[in-house]
Image 1: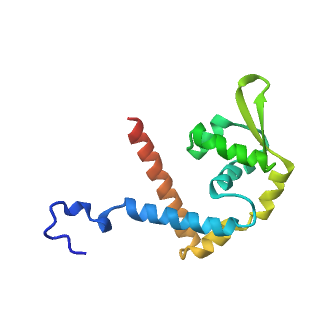
Image 2: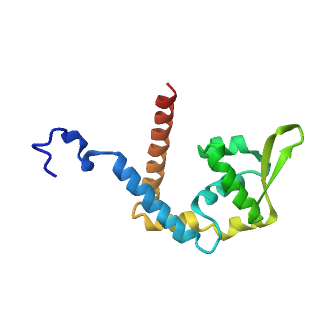
Image 3: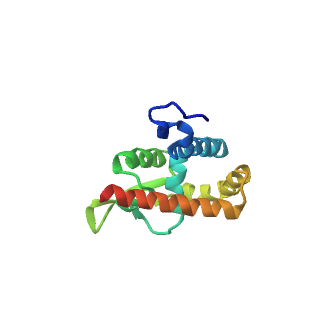
Length: 153
């Protein structure tokens, strides 16, 4: 790529970090759509379910949103659709009526087995080793943490 003669060569697309991150996000999301076909889950719903499968206790909508880095305006419609599909339940916290707790239904728990091969299938399609994938995940997690810290400063 020749950026000579440009007034702002630093703005060349090939020099940006944002574009490969964006393109990778789109490619990975597209692959998840294929892998989740037949499960009834969208990729964002799959992420919600991943968090719920990690615990046996109900989670508050607030803690679920924090874990997924989603605001309630984005999370609430996802939860509604999962509830309509009978995969989760939303109940008021008996100890604090302001809090809504989310828990898995029996169908939601059963779905975990159906999608248990998805991470391995995604990994096989990425063209990198497991170690490289784990290192990349750690780097991206650090990047997001740093950006969140910079945003709140």
